[in-house]
Length: 326
Image (spheres, rainbow, N blue to C red):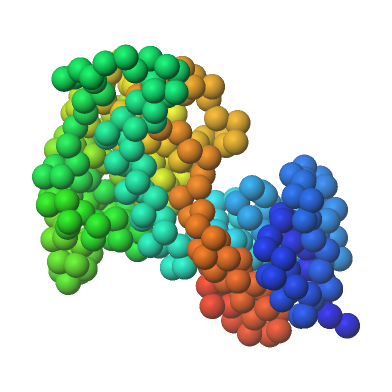
């Protein structure tokens, strides 16, 4: 008999068909958002879960489903999975790194540009019929070219963003858990490693690309925002919870920073409605990886992991190698 799996959200039909070649598949192509209790029930009797960041995969789920062998996330981030509980339960957990680096970097760059150049704000002005004349100070903002870019989180995506800055003649500062190798810094437009406070003080445009964890919760809060230049912008394409959204809203409202671009939110999709009253923020619904080729590659990468895990192999993107010893 084929192993049984549950696919928790709607995915590309061709990827679903591929999974059906290997597994007895129960899928959620109607794309319902299940409660914790419903998800626990859906996992019952399954050998594997094809998951997305919208589903909390908890210790309770593992305890209720001791037959579970693998949870494969269709995302780079995996803060929705209790990795320690998965390891203790002997469940392999995986993610989908690398396949979305360039697309996410493209989007981070686009969001930063839109934020700096006030594109959303000016478009709303035009659509509302308010454009009656040209003015020397209409929607003026900071330059991107020749400015200082600060990247917090200098992994693969951060480095891809830094490479894009070369054509804009920017200076690049970065802060990371550890310093890159000299050759990596050179490829990243000669990026300079600095402390977080120095980066916030010096950068004209700050981009956040670090993973979410207890340690990175509210990496940017009121104190950090107060360090930034009043002309600076902040772009978050990392994860909700990296930024204290209430503090960001207050800083934007008070003009302590010029503008922000936000693709991820605390408690998304139930983001703080106060964002909607601000004109100096560009808001997008967690779409940094949303190109068709990239999302398809992510789905296939998650499928690769699940096929490997349930056929007795080590998945290529195993997050908890200690599970083999658990």
